[in-house]
Image (cartoon, rainbow, N blue to C red):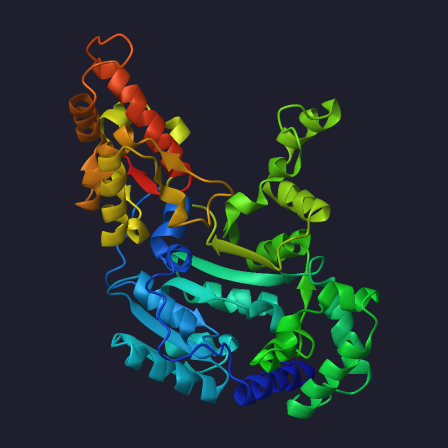
Length: 443
C-alpha cells in the first residue's frame, strides 16, 4: 500500500477511534428484527445462489469492519452455533464489539484489531463474509475484494456494499464544501460538527444543497454521529452500477443478487408494466442483470447503498431453478420454512388466523423481499402449519390439503389429488419467490 493510501486509512481509523460506530445501546437486541435477521442469516444468500439449504452450525462467519459489533451481534443471533469473527482497524471499536457479544452471552466469537488488507494473517477460511458500510471508504476497494476472496471458502459468499454516486450526490457536494473550508483536514470533532450545523442552518431552505441533504435529525440529540457519517465522513466515495460490476470482474467475483432484490425491479417503475411503449416492451426483456440494475438507478436512484452478495465464479454444479423442476422433482421434493419465520409468535398468529378464518399476512414479519402485502387465505394457510415443526415432504402438504378441503366448495365434488397438487404448487411457488419457504430437490 502506498503512502497516500496508508495516510487515508489512518484518517479513517482516527475518525472511528474517536467516534466509534454504530452507537447502538449495549442492551439493544436484534431478536425481534426479523428483516435484519433475514438478511444476515446465511441461509438466505446461500439459497439464492445454490437453491439449497445450508446449516449454520459450525460455519465460520467474518464481520469485516465490525465497528462496535452490532452487526456481529445480528450475525450471531441469525446463525445459531456459527463462529463469529470480527475485525476492525479501530481498537476502541473492537473493544466495544467484544464487550457487546459477551454482554449478550455469545461465547463463540472473537475480535481482532486488523485491517481488511491484512486478513490472510488470521489464517482462517470463511463460509460467509459480511462487509457492511466499509468498502466505499477504502483507498483500494478492489484490493479489499481480492483479499476477502482469498480467505473465502469455495462455496462461500460475500455481502458488501458501495455508496451510490447518484443517490448520494448531494452529500458528496457537501463534503467538498466542508473539505474546502478545512473542516476535514484533521479528525473532525465537536467544533467541526458545530460549524457544519451552523453553516447548514444558515442557508435558505430553497438552496439546492440544503434541500437535498438537510434533515432535522442532525439537530436532535445524538445528531453528532449523523453529521460525522454524512457531511464530515472521511474518504466517502460514490459508485455506479457499471463501476460495481467492473470491480467484481476485476476481482474475478460473481454477482449473486442485490440484498433487497425485489426493490430493484425495473418493471415496478412503470404505471402499466403490461402495457409498455412498444420499444420498451421489446428492449427490456433483452437486458442482462447489470443493464437492468443500471437502468433502474438512472431512472430512480432511490437506494443509498448498492448492497449486494457475490462469490467465487464457475460453479461446478448447475443450479436448477424452481421453474425448471420436473414432475418428479415436485413429487419427491421437500419444503423448509425460512429460519427467521420459525418463531413461536409467528406460529401463534397463524393459528389465530386459521381459527378465525382470516388471511394470514406473512409479509408483516419479513418485508425485505416484497414491496406489497403478501397474504395467504386461511384454509390454505393451514396446510403450511406443519412447517413450524420442521422440514416437510411436499407430498405430505398435499395430503393435508385433501383433509382440510376434501370437497370443492362450489360443486361439492371430492377434490382430486391432481387438483390438490395444483393448489400446493401454486402456494409454494408464490411463497418461494419471497424466500418465505425454501424448496429442496431430492438428490
